Image (cartoon, rainbow, N blue to C red; front, top):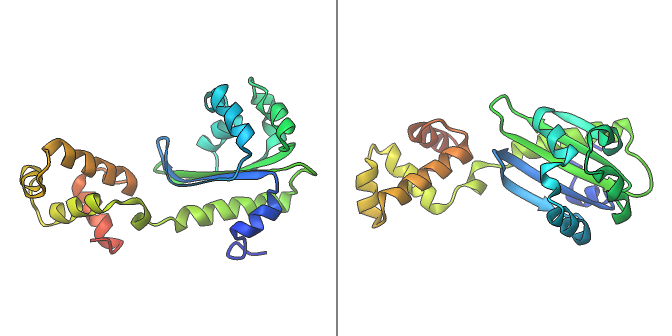
Length: 201
């Protein structure tokens, strides 16, 4: 099965015990997220604050590719790889894709019947890379952020933009900051250029 054929319905076959996708993450904020993990596991995860000790998340910060959940057990002080079996997630895989800029995506995939094969790990890694590239800036930017970028592209100063929109300069700066983060741009001008190149403004 090719990457283009690996749809969300196919993921239900590959990950019948659940899956999670965090796409185009900058710092801790994904541009898109899909969470099909068991509710009872999510409740435990939040209650025990596993986010801070999650070996899959730690692995995804520095790697591209895929690894089995069981291979992370040596670096799992909270025992998550053992506890997850009680929630039908006996076997799992983590797939990640990371750009040199730090923008990254990762996925968690689980099943209860058997471990993932090497071919399946490769397939999941390709799927995450494909999904990472497929999440467009159009899905990320709000109308307010696009409007600010249009004004920046036209050379309008922040003070004038705030006056024209009837909001505070702080609100305009926040919209511009959000747009910069989503577009992985260092400056407002660079964000405007990227948005223009993407056909958003």
